[in-house]
Structure formats: structure tokens, C-alpha cells
Image (cartoon, rainbow, N blue to C red):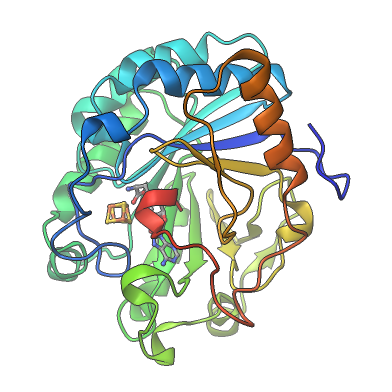
Length: 315
Ligand code: SAM
Ligand code: SF4
């Protein structure tokens, strides 16, 4: 699939639920997502059908996200179906890790190839404060279980929160001396609950380089992160700056929300309902969605244009 600017579109982010067992302060309100009936959400069968159509059009990588994918019933069945699709090269999943201790081995057995695990602090109390109901020990146990299950090249996602976790940048960097992980710092995007937070909370990821000038750049790969490494480290550091349009020119993604809407861009207002579409109609809608991709978003200038929160779209 190609978009109207000639970019290859071969990456689908599929949100499998809006719900979550945590309530990260920047992502979800304390009360969680407004209750919607199960019928409003894509069934496992529909999620698989959309994925199959996307793969038939050239999608090579699917990332399952949410909400928290590990709270979605039937997730393992979905993973088994998707990993068996001829042509799909990578089946990835982003998780908060809280349930990964139990899920890591079954996910591996169901064909998931890579995991991204979100971890914004290494301090127990701060973790409890930030997630409102999570326990650091659970996510750390989940990371250990993922390694035990054979997931290598783990990516650890840390959203930079000025005045909250930027005092821990050094602690996160030091993890890469002992672990072959890519620790990724991500700029906070003003969406949903954090849309009106004070500007001191929004730190550019170049802060990491300014504070740790020892970091050496690594060659760019196809991803959105600018990669660096500390001398002598086995792991690497990724810097992701969604607040600039840095990676828009290289964007290869389409997104589908848990209620079946195709989004051409994380911050786009235009959506296309895929529900009820099958076969050629479904494929045509996916192609039209790819053609509707904007060249870039306008986060810095005017803010996100989407009416959805991050937990609906999947980060
Ligand atoms: N629940 C899973 C998790 O936390 O990894 C998957 C969904 S979550 C929405 C995906 C990613 O989006 C997480 O790494 C989260 O930290 C990030 N995220 C959520 N809200 C964000 C925001 N306003 N700005 C930047 N990243 C955000
Ligand atoms: Fe849940 Fe992930 Fe949002 Fe945190 S960032 S509330 S874990 S969906």
C-alpha cells in the first residue's frame, strides 16, 4: 500500500480494547473509560478479518495495543490467528506489563515476536502515584518473565514527565549497562487528561542528550526513535519526539481503534468506520484510509485534532 505522498504503508496498529487495569495520570481519568457495551467493540473475529485484509494489502507488521491488550478476552486466540498469516513478518504488542508475569510465555507460544513495555519510573511510590493502581513489582516481574519466555530486544517505553520523572533519566540510562534493552524516552503529547497540564511537564527528549552528553548516536533504522548508546552499554537508548513532525515523513502506519475506526494519523480528525465491511469493500476502505494520510500532524501548532484519548487510539 502507498499513500498519496508515496510513503509505503506496511504497519498496522490495532487497538484491541479501550479498557485498562491502570489509570496513568496523563492517559486516563481516575474513573477509567466511559462504559460502552461489548457490542460496540470489535469482536476477535472482526479484529482478525481487518488484519487479514491489511496483510493482503502489504502490511508486514502489526502492533496490538489499547488500552491494555492483556485485559482483552480472547487475545491469545487473536495472536495465534495473526501470527499464522502468510506475509506478516512481525506481530508486536505494547503492554503496561502488570499481567505479563502470567502472559509472557503464552504470548510467545501464540506467536508474538516483540514486546514494548511501558515503565515511567523505577520508584515504587511514584509508580503507585502515576498509575493510581499499579505496582512496580508486577511490571518488573513481567519484564523478567518476558526475558525468561525468550523475548529479546525488549523495548522499555518511558514517557518524559517534567518535574515527575526527569530526575530518573540517569537511572533509566544505567539499565542499558546490564540489559540489552532499548530504553525509549517519549515526549508527552497534550491529549486527554494531560491536554491542559502546565508547560513544565512537557520536556523535549533532547533534554536527555543535554544532560548526558556521553551518549553516542547509533545509525538510524526504520523506526521512529533516534537511537543512542552509552559507551560500554549492551542496550541502547531511543529518543522519540512526537511533538515535532520529525518522523511524519517516514510514517508507515495506519491505526484501527477498538470500536473499528480507521485513523490515517494518530492526531487526525477524519475517521472511517470499518465495521460491517468485508472482502473488497474492506480492502477498499483500508486503501482509502492510506490515501487520506496527511503529510504530518500539527501538534506543536494547534494541538491534536483527534477527538479521542490516547487509550482509545493506542499510543
Ligand atoms: N497500556 C499499554 C501501555 O501502557 O503500554 C498500551 C497502550 S498505551 C496508550 C501506549 C503508550 O502510549 C504507552 O507507552 C503510554 O505511556 C503512551 N502514552 C499514553 N498517553 C500518552 C501521552 N499523552 N503522550 C505520550 N505518550 C503517551
Ligand atoms: Fe493504561 Fe497504558 Fe494508558 Fe497507562 S498508558 S492508563 S497502562 S492504556
